[in-house]
Amino acid sequence: MNAITKSAKGTVPGDGHSFLMPLPWLRLTPDVSHGPLDGAWWPRYDALELELPALVGSLDPSIGTVTRVTVGTAAWPDAPQEVMAPGHVIEVALSNGAAEMHAITVDCGTVGRWELLVVPPDEPAGTAALLLTAASDPENPLSAPRLLALAESGLDGQDTWESEGGAGPR
Image (cartoon, rainbow, N blue to C red):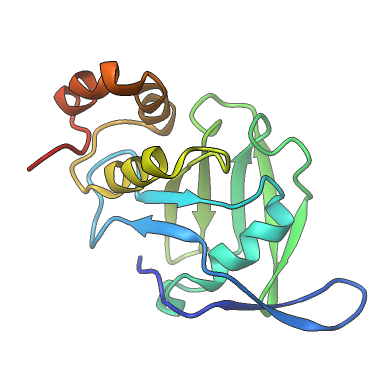
């Protein structure tokens, strides 16, 4: 799965005016992932209906149409059941599972599905950059909750993170 570099187009519900959404902070695993994550996404706000169209619009069209996403209710308690994306509607499924607490599953029907770490919008830029890099490392063995827990432990957790396969100096 690849990200593209153009802003996503959208329409403001109810008034028909179109707009360009800024690119989301997105980092994807090149080629095939061998870990529990296929990359990471750092949304600007905790409003899924505002952020999801930009995420979907920034993905390479060759992956197919995003038909459904699964998100954790803890991270997105007010998520709608459907979100309008450029040219189509995306079904939003909510999960109470621990693995989905800080992740989003992007489902493209028969083409495939991708699991992305969702970096909390209020995460400091330095930590977010580290998480984006670690989650998109094809050899990352850590789940979304484990990556976030290690990042939140601060510098004391750096050695643990690297010993468990997180991104470090190479």
